[in-house]
Length: 400
Ligand code: FEO
Image 1 (cartoon, rainbow, N blue to C red):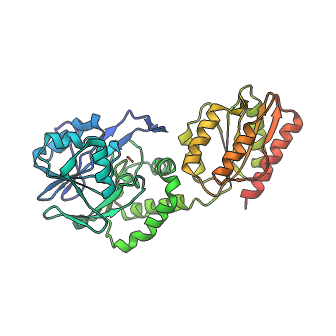
Image 2: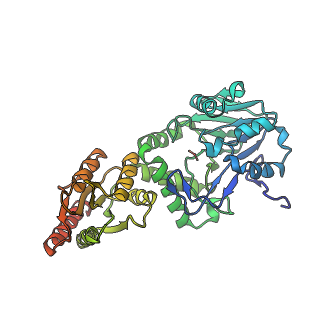
Image 3: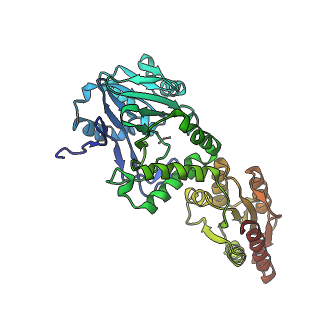
């Protein structure tokens, strides 16, 4: 361990040679409060193979880890399980610097890698059922289209039972530890859920389909090695992450209500507090999230196990208030399921925000219970009681 940035041996022939991005706080609009890792793996077959790479700026870190095990010039193959640049970004430089013979990817992966980097003839297409022989080691391919890109695939190292799962089963979490069992269980549950909510939620039917199909591949999985976060290797942990994925993909509603709002002059804030009081009195649990200090990616994480979404917005220039519109636009893309919803808000003269919010929630297939409650300027006692009633009404729907 005298080298800077050494590899970690994770099995007889496999080394982790990725990078730790301690400082990452924004991953394309997703707040990554605990940083991330880009996991790359070296498989020491006769054809030494690199499975995925890292963001370009971590090229040197990855190469240093590789150098702690072998001469990088010995690498002959790259398997690209996913073309997004946090995993493929260093491929062009690896190809330029080393004598790489082939870069394997799914059909859409070959297309995407060419469209990103024009890698040309070095690319070789692999499909579900194909096996890549590395000499003394075999990788079998399972395409996982749209999980979460069209190109995504798993590669399974048969002899040692390691499933290289790219983004699936991963999380944004920068740590010195590489294995799930070395980490705080609550943190890994939270960060895995946050990752699922922000990256995979809208693809839940495809996730369920894959989980149902997985046994038919007869994989004797000893380890799941994703491209972000810790490796799952204890049998209980492997089962746990698979169970979590099923739970999140099913998104069964609970008695939890998420209330999001922003406010201009505290009027919508007062209405939000009254709505929350009604929910609590009706037996719901409440997550009240003022958007002035709450990130969109945290809202979606809370929705993963919610039964209701209540949205409060002032009307500004006849529209939904900007912070609320931003979060709702993000929620719309991630298509949460099995939610009931309602809106409320204060306004000055025309008060269109609740109408826009109701329409938006219907577009997301949220079951909007009633027309939104809007109130001109500062809410009166009656207006606050109406908000409380709305909370009670929603609680009646989600509390069994
Ligand atoms: Fe970690 Fe879809 O990239």
